[in-house]
Image (cartoon, rainbow, N blue to C red; front, side, top):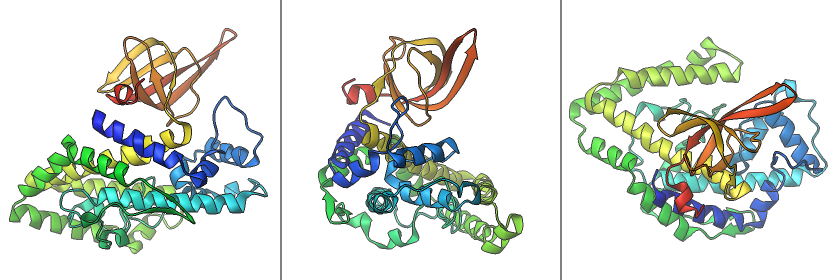
Length: 347
């Protein structure tokens, strides 16, 4: 990630925050440390406590999945649920159009012959997946050669044309996108044959019949099977074909981390709060740390600004451990740092 990406993402998030429909949806998202009397916020907090990993910009589909689960049938829907749920659908529809347009700016799109985009992988399945899927219909919309489409939320729209163009320019200049362009240009006929062969094999492995044979009902196990088969297919590739598939994953992850991970937090909660000093700091590898914050951190996915002189950067919480002992309560946070974000956001 670059400072240019963080700057463009902040501007795009501000455009989304200006929408009344978006504010209606995000206003009830749980805010740890700030109990809400809104029954919608209480419902969402209960789903989050039951491992719903969701964000406000694609909450409709994630919540639809959880509502259908028999073990969660007791969760009461408030009286104002239905109109709010319609607003959540409108927000998600606009978000997915935006995401599809940015993905369409990838080098070679839509002719991305990689195993990850074979039908029924975690990238493309119509069933449960943690990913924002690459819809087949989006690849035929000509987004790669058109300006950003209007982001329509019912009768409201978000004017984000300039912000989307700036973000697309920043993504094109990123190392991951440049690597994808380079590996694509270097593909040989033999590489293409290997990619086509592995895609055919994976398509057969992920046929509905094969997935049903492995697990007919449980969504998480079906997802795990798809993921394992996809990863195996990528691991079978060699040479330029392997480089190209890995470059695609890297470029796709860059979009998803920015748009489907960081941006929803900015839209919902604004720029991150300062959590102060980082006591008992451990370095866990590239851009990953763990520490004891001076203020409580409660939920994963949250963006925080760590103003400790040893860090002075924005990070996203990936894990929290609580410790109760000696009459005291403290917690330890694991964080993925976002290099350049603090400077880009003026923190």
